[in-house]
Amino acid sequence: MAWNVLNPVGKKQRQGVEVDWRQRYKDLLKSIDYKDMERLRRENKRLSSRVKELSGLLNVHRELNSTVSLDEVDANLAKLHGVRLSQLYEKYGKGTTRTKHILRFIAYHGYNMSLASVGWRYGKTCHSNMSRAMDRVVAWYQTGALTDAEIDFICLYTHENIFNAYNK
Picture (cartoon, rainbow, N blue to C red):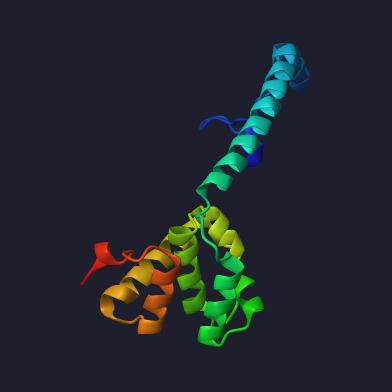
């Protein structure tokens, strides 16, 4: 396949087409505008530093003004479920799925963390897994699979009326 791309062969023609690779390479080098490339590189560097600065500012302002740190919330829920705290941060922590989902829900809704940062904190996963975790906790609430202690725990660290929109 690669040979046909480099040396195209027609349907009726069985032999490769002669290509002057040196001339193609020289033409390619002539077509590159190095001054424009350097300008784009500097602009990209400037914009990247600006994006990093603004994202840092957004993360500061997104945090909930809670007196309880998220580390304490992790420890309290781990104690409630009887799970080791280190398992909550592992990528493949067996038996901690329910605890991780609830913590992800609390971190997103109660502490206004982004889905990407929640995923990185609890299991080094992507944001799509986080949205499924949110849906799973809501489904557990709607089917009555959450215990009263878990519901109280979620309401304590998020907003009291977090489940009002999801009533059965």
